[in-house]
Amino acid sequence: MYLHRMACCGIYEIDDLQRQRTPLTNMRQFVTAIAPVPCAYGPYGPSVRVRDQFRYAIFSGTARAKYGDRFAAFILDHQLGEVISTGYHINPNSGHRLKVWVWTIDHVALKAWSAQNMPAPAGVNNAR
Image (cartoon, rainbow, N blue to C red; front, side, top):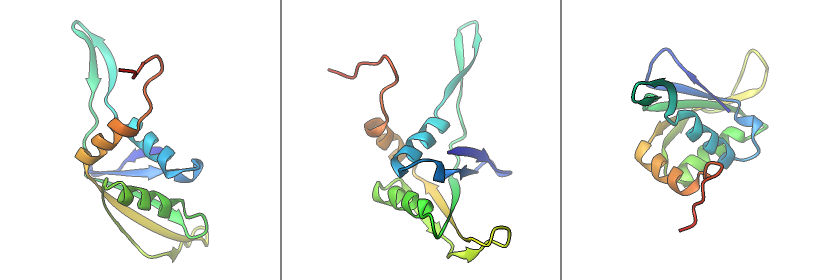
């Protein structure tokens, strides 16, 4: 799964959903891709690059493979925002039936989901 910023800073495209077996794995990759990361060391330690909290993510899928349908259902089942979609239409480039989804991301819900469903980083013991 890859994340691409579009011309508008409020929209990103999620690409290559088909590379993962489950929507859970795709969502974990998405959360990892948008997480703040250290980008440079300054006099006070590492500064952190904070990604824009973009409002929308778009993704697509084919009628045959259903990975887009499964990812959209996962978002809705876990109440991570709203999802709207087009119908399936023939892609003139490939001849495949293609559908596009637009996800209005609920960042509060996504953060709560992440706290419960993201694996601990290597070397971290979550035992209490």
